[in-house]
Amino acid sequence: MATTSTTGSTLLQPLSNAVQLPIDQVNFVVCQLFALLAAVWFRTYLHSSKTSSFIRHVVATLLGLYLAFFCFGWYALHFLVQSGISYCIIIVAGVESMHHPMMIITQKITSLAYEIHDGMFRKDEELTPSQRGLAVRRMPSLLEYVSYTCNFMGILAGPLCSYKDYIAFIEGRASHMAQSSENGKEEQHGKADPSPNAAVTEKLLVCGLSLLIHLTISNMLPVEYNIDEKFQATASWPTKATYLYASLMAARPKYYFAWTLADAINNAAGFGFRGYDKNGVARWDLISNLRIQQIEMSTSFKMFLDNWNIQTALWLKRVCYERATFSPTIQTFFLSAIWHGVYPGYYLTFLTGVLMTLAARAVRNNFRHYFVEPPQLKLFYDIITWAVTQITISYTVVPFVLLSIKPSFTFYSSWYYCLHICSILVLLLLPVKKSQRRKSTQENVQLSRDKKFDERENSLGQNSFSTMNNVCNQNRDTGSRHSALTQ
Image (cartoon, rainbow, N blue to C red; front, side, top):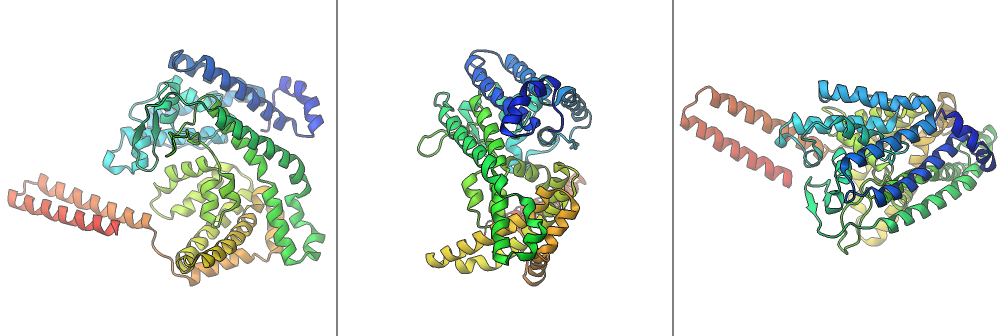
C-alpha cells in the first residue's frame, strides 16, 4: 500500500512508532480489524433473513469503498472508476480480460469476464465441469458487479471468490448450497444456517501466532543476509542451505497473517461455508487461501503451489492454464509475473519457477513409482523430497523478496546457478511424459472436428444410408476414445 489518507496517518502515527511498523501496514491491520467487527455486525443485523439483497449489496459496497479511502486516500477512486470502466467493457466486449495494478480486483474482473463468456457465449458441452459450475448465465447489474469487486470483506486482501458464490451468499443461499469444484454440481443441505464462530476463532489464533512470529523471528533472519559478502565467503554449503531455508520460512508468516485474517473476516460475515464433512462438521474453507501444514511439509513443488495462495492458483488455472493452446505452464507463470507487478525479481522468480516445475514433474514421473513400497522406503523418499522441495522453493523465491535485479543475480551467482543447471539437465536427460491434460485436449479437439465434419456432410443432403453410417462411425469412434481416456 503505497499511499495512505492524511487523517488515517495522523491518528495512527503513535501506534506505528510504538510497534515499529510502517504506517501503511498499521492502517492495513486497523482496517482489517474494523472489517472483522463490521462483518460480525453485517451477519447479525443484515442477515439475508432480515433484509433484502439490495441493502446487503449497498452496505457491503459502501463499507468497502470507505476502507479503500481510509488506506489510499483519493487514490481509492481508482477502485470505483476502474470497476465502472471494466463493467462497461464486459457489457460491450463480453470476455476480454484486463490487467490492472489492483491485484484482487484484476482477478475478480477477469474471472467474471470468463464466467460470463462461458455462461452466455459457449455451449455446455464445450465447458469443463468446473467451468460449467461457475458459468454466469445472465449479465450482472451494476450494483451486483460493484458489490462483488469492492465489498468490504475482500477489497484490501481478498481472497478471490467466484461471482456465483458471492451472489449466493448475499442472497442467503450459501448456507443451503455448496458448490463442488470437482463435478460442477450443487449439493443441497437441509441443515440450519451454520455458525462460523469456531472457524473464526481458530483463524484469529493462527493470525495472532503468525503476527508474533513475524514481529520477532523474521527480523532475526533477514533474507538479505543470503547475499552478504562475508557470509558468502565464509559459510559452508550446509550453512548456506540451512540459512536459506530458515530465512525464507521466517518470511512466510506475514502472508499467513494477512490471508488468514482476510479469510476470518469473510467467515465472520457468513461467507465461506463449503458444506459439511462426512462427520457433519461445517467446513469454512470455500475461499481459504492457504494450508499452512501442507505448505511446511510439502514433498513436491506442485504440493507447495497447490497449498500456497490457493485462490490465485485457481484463478491462474481457470483463466490461463485450462484455456492455453500451447505451453500452458509457461504462459501461466508469465501471467502470474505480470499480475504481481513490474519488479524484475518477480520475473526472475517465475521464470525460475517454470524450470523447477517442469524438472520436478519429470523427476516425479520417472522415479516416484520406485519408492511407493515398502513403507520404510516411502518414508525415506518423503524425507529426501521434503528437503529438496524446501530448498528449491527457497532458492526460487529469493528474487521475489529482493525485488531488484542486481542482488538477485548476486544470490544466484553465489550458488553458481546450480539448481538452474540441474533443472536443465533433468529436462534434457529424462523422458517427459505427455500430460493427461494434453491428451484429453487433443482427443476433444479431434472429436469436435469429427462432429463438425459429420454435421457439414449431413447439411449437404446426404442420403439416409450415408447419414446412418456417419452416425454409427461417430458413435464407435466416440466409444473408443472414451475407453482410451478412462484407461
